[in-house]
Length: 116
Image (tube, rainbow, N blue to C red):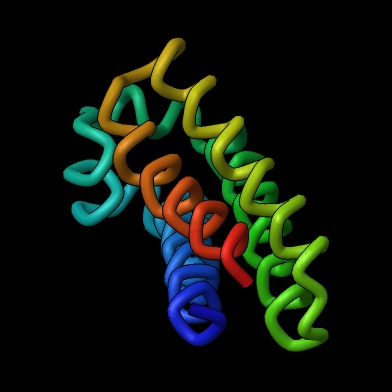
């Protein structure tokens, strides 16, 4: 079960690295416009906010990698809990799919870690 939990934690971390890249570097490019279903004008107007969001997603990824490489299950649980909370908030304030994309893998990781 420990290996499965580590794999899921790594996947959640990689998802957040990808989100960081989308929000910080690809926000106004076709990849970012498509991923976030927005037009070029909206992307230009929100570029700085998106970069800030991306940085926070990077911190989540860093915390998850820290938990993985240190082997500290408590750190992993904490950052998965942060991701799950962000997923719920995003679902309530932006779009329900955020809960699936962010919250689902985080919840799976927390469940797996409960059996470690």
